[in-house]
Length: 80
Image (cartoon, rainbow, N blue to C red; front, side, top):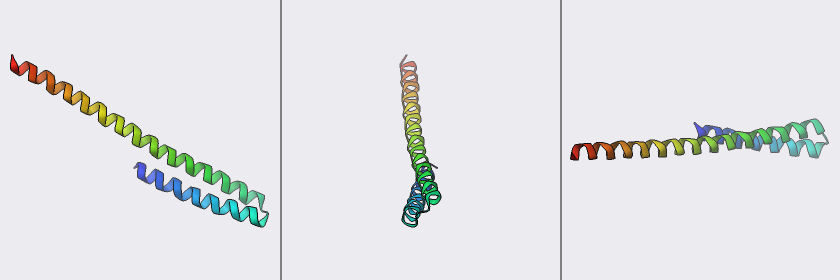
């Protein structure tokens, strides 16, 4: 899912940059501003994808530590 966010973000940045440059070259300030906005939103989507990855990794690490702790407690109980 986060790969999709990153890919969409990158695509939006590319489209935004194209609009920004086109607007700048043609003197179309509205198109240039729209391109800058689209590029900014693309960066936000990409950052959101990165954040989702980090949260998922943290969740996986917490689950692993929890399972390791449960296994350790079970092993100690079985030893008694």
